[in-house]
Amino acid sequence: MTITEVRDSSGNNIHVSGTIDHSTVHQNLAKRQATFTISDAGEKLQVLYKGKPQPNLANATTVVVIGKMEGNQFVAHDMMLKCPSKYESTKEASGSGS
Image (cartoon, rainbow, N blue to C red):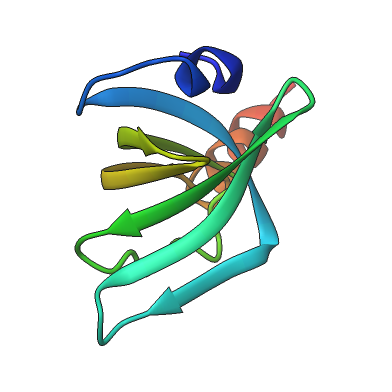
């Protein structure tokens, strides 16, 4: 779903993806929570993630969060991160033979 669609949705297992605004990332390891903002197509969404700490959150470019809307905030119980550094060496290796 897009950020716009999520704002008008109900349900507990909504999937939404976006680009992470790293200036907004705050992790509280003791509470097992993280807050951050994601954006997509000019829209922004505040996310509260409650769950297992994600050590790669600072390096990720995009994220898929799974959860529900509570007021103006998306409360996620799961997330999947996409980290570009994991794939950069593969791209460079495949591009060097051309």
